[in-house]
Length: 636
Image (cartoon, rainbow, N blue to C red):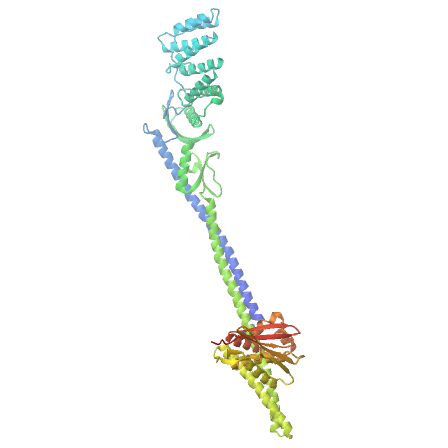
């Protein structure tokens, strides 16, 4: 099949072009999908790599922090960071730095030794037949002993006996004296603590509520400050008892939970120390708070550093800033210690890092990462969409251009056919008549004169057709120049209608012009050609009514020449396109009237060159009215 066959208008070329454009768009859509999948995979890999790097940086920061913690805590002097406690213990005692941060200890110093049976006589009188008065005298005498331990023991028993005797003011004074003996321990407990607890008991018994609440609150604060060396059970009992005395007046004590957690951690470390050299790091959850413990121990001494929640939060904050990520910690059993992360994570197990916790690292701002990825995808989609839009747009305009060129080619073909027919009709008549005249077949002079008249009329018809084509060509190419001159539109209308009447045998032209001159500045020849074309169209498309109405009117500064017929009319859909070259209305094509499709195009071009306009009023089956409106010439 020849190659040119594929370009026969209009179907094959348009089908092939549309198929190519659709294929291009589909390929672009497939490429967009592949690019999006690849971009998502690259983004996921990039995010994973960033998280892995952040996790490694977090491990490094935690290791540096723990090394610094050990260095500071295991040294013998120098300040410690907030929320850090150093513990030094042996098998008989335990000390803290800073002091007072441990509210209870695993072991207490022994009590002072008392002479055997020193309080036997008083206790026999107290609990025997001698009575409380005799016991009070015996105990009071012992309060003047040289030994502080004996005096403290005697004061405890004296206060108890006075309470039993109902002598409460004396009992309060006795306990006040005992409270001043701060360096004495009675049965493992500090004498001043025993005295203050006893005073609260007396105040409770005597219903001195305000004084009881005040002394109970003071006692609670001293217990929370680690003032006394107590083991855990006595401390917890004393604190709960004083809290009950304080009741609703009990004031909150800041940092108590942390102090309890530190004390519990120190107690746990001391309890598990069995005298063998050891070291380690661990996170213990005590009093519902995590405590980091780092320790070293040999056979005689254990040194430990304890860090609380605030310290862990500070380190995690530093890690988050340094690694630009969210960080969460969990103990070796997987229980959360600090922080919470969501989304994609990088995890470092405690067994792999040597740290006392596992680390989970996630993006610091996952929403921002998602937003950045979304922006990149939108940019990619926008770029692909733009390319697709360019393809579709260029395809659309190219498609329109091809259709227009094909339509022009079709119109030109129809134009050539119409012009050929227009030329063939008069040429056929002229050829036949010329042969008859040349052969001498026309004998009569009258008949010969008629034939000569027909030859002249047909030659003039051909001349007008040729002139119309030449005028249209000049107007299209812009080669023709208009020669504007002052003229009377009424004279022009009358002249053209008179000339056209001689051409339109059997037609009636009813012309109406004003009695006064209608001056315009126009090109006489071109304006006459436009009016002739309108008259010619009115004649061709009015097969049933052989009358044409021409009216010249003046309105303001404009002159209007209306040509009206009662022909086939023009549908609304055709009223714009019939002024384009080679275009003919559907009614004209269906009626079988021959035409070139350039008459109204010439009218439109000529009138616009004169600064005017062409108006059309039409009704199918009832005729049309074409009105030429041009500006009148103004006079100074």
